[in-house]
Length: 235
Image: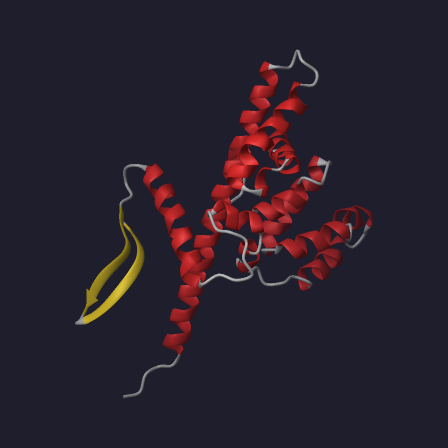
């Protein structure tokens, strides 16, 4: 019996896209976690603002307490970064799920708000990877546009340099693995990452409350006599 071979390719694409989406959901939750940590640190600093060295002491103390428990994502440098993240993006509703934490870290290096908003808009519009965003920042795309009389040509060149966005670049970040509770290893079985991601998705869905139901981590489904296992069942 002849089978349309495109169906296999289509299903593979669906599977890959779903995996990419799951990774991005978890990474966005990580980004929100860093924002809330930064907010809490800033609020605590305001309580002790009469002591000039309180902020420095607080961050050092937090690092000493948290790094042994949660890894290098809570070094003094990283905790300072979370505070800076909150100070620059004070409205949590301005955070974009399309941007990864690694891209936000690049954006934090930009002091000019208009320049930063330009790179945010271009990253979302062109689906830039972390490397692509980094390349455009360090090649001074924003400044070149301001100086150019032919802005469309400058943007066209940048667009032609675009690389396909790949969620796998997110999971290469050691802090992403720490967020999932995984140790830094050269490689992981797909099931290890899958289970860790599903665990975080389950917690996220349960927090949404009414309207969502987490059925099972793996649900058996019968369709016309065939048996399938669907992971992370949600209704």
